[in-house]
Amino acid sequence: MLPHPHHLPSGASNPVILLTGFDPFGGDAVNPSWLLAQALQGQAIGGHTVVSAQLPTVFGQALERLAALHRQLRPALTVCLGQAGGRAALSIERIGINVDDARIPDNRGAQPIDQAIVPDGPAAYFASLPIKAMLRAVLRAGVPCEVSQTAGTFVCNHVLYGLMHLLATEGAAGMRGGFVHVPWLPGQGTPSLPLRDAVRGLHQALWAAVLARQDIALGAGATH
Ligand code: PCA
Image 1 (cartoon, rainbow, N blue to C red):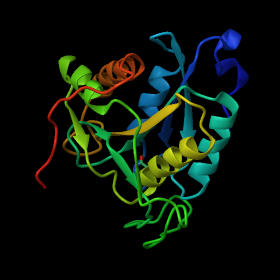
Image 2: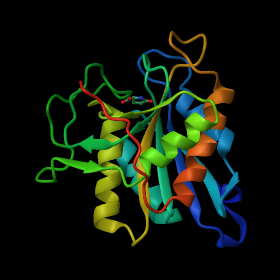
Image 3: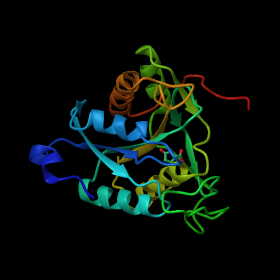
Image 4: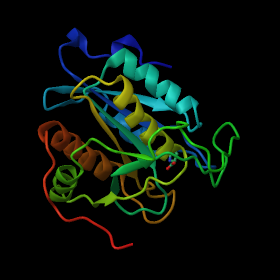
């Protein structure tokens, strides 16, 4: 479902930050990415207004929903969120790769193996977010955060790659996007991050993304 009109920013004068989360998957009862997106719905951040929407954890359908939202809202910034059980920090993704390789079935039972997301599309797209500026802003707020070099090969990577393909093919100049993975909530597993910390950290990250038109140089690489 598209956001109900009363959830849309009034006056349409503020540029929109589209913030998406997923429905629960893989046997979990909740998905912190959706709780986090909902918590920031309607927030004003740096002259932008956050519009939150849920994507299904379903290959293909998630991208159809995202494309519909994008055409409706024409967001200046699109940040998709997903749950990453086992990660201990807000995890800002650098890159989406052109492959679906599912270890578990999606919410419709599909389990693609080594399929291209966009046949003949580029091997990968970098997120067009200032990931290091965002990292610094979140860490300064005292919330654990990292840059991640892979969003996996399940529906989250599918959405990141598909978002960047959408921006490359249909986006207007200046429209940017990317992906942030979120740890489990306490009670879902260990390690975990309380929702209030995730909300505070993501708010800082979005603020930094709006303000920083260019990224900063800050070491956050990985040797493996
Ligand atoms: N996390 C999964 C898909 C949905 C979600 O929240 C992933 O990391 O691919």
